[in-house]
Length: 395
Image (tube, rainbow, N blue to C red; front, side, top):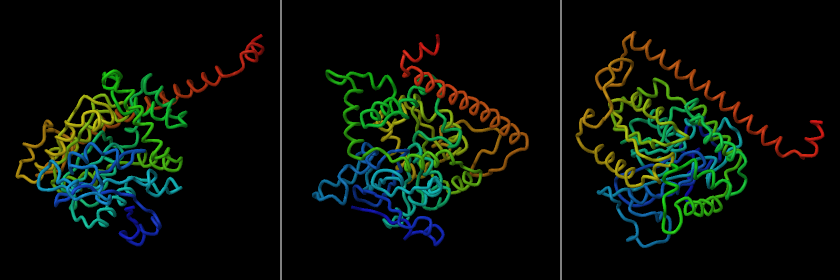
């Protein structure tokens, strides 16, 4: 099975930290165009199957025994080779036991090691959710190796990882924490990944929810439930993620095109955070909003694939940045432009005030959510007590 030993492709300091860490990967298709896919929290490489099929023309990995005719050059034209891998802490990749061994910077270095292992000098980098955070870090570290950047259902990490606080998400959180079997986890994942409208659509004589439920149970049973170390580590990577001003300047300095793709009904990664990041990447970024949930790449497969193929095509053309972006031009602040990245003092002060107010609001929502979650656990705990003992205590 194909593995990349990341320590072999890193300097002495990083190699010592990653001694023995292996990343499982798969490649698909053949051709000069290279695409690296980075999946999100608790996901495995095959979560990208709908995109792999569109880009490479096949979901049969190159290491499988199959006729060469089964390995298409993809719909993108010119021949596309795709690589998807399991992040550390999930699937067939190594599972470090320390939380400190999981950050988006460390995981970006894993992805760079995979590129080195494959001999890829440059690639289009596409990431989903936590994978999009990793993709941002990769682009900041080695912008010269990035041909284009696609960020699906992304946030800026930290407090922006807090989901929308309402009754639905609190219920999902409680069910997620209690899920111990593939069946329980599958039921929660469906409500996390897809919009309610999509799940309620009829598929033959049943619903899409019923069809997907069986597929999810099968998939989770095959890959296994994520270990506690892996889950805690990947959560730590999300919470500790932050794009600094230097990171943003590094990304924008390279001049490659960026697509920020997001589902309007995402209950995990809020749309507003993705828009905010896209604005910081003006004029290199284009915002693509679709009617879907967190796994918009599955719910709106055709539209997402079209956006990715368009990004690849546009990145090889002479398109103007201002023809590419669909974002309004910023009149103040420290927006990144090809000519100047300096800000006016008034714009900077205004931006700081907005950031502080937004952060305060999110933290208040977070603490309210924790209170409601604790209340729900207490209520459920009391309800499980023996009614006789409860009645006795009340008399």
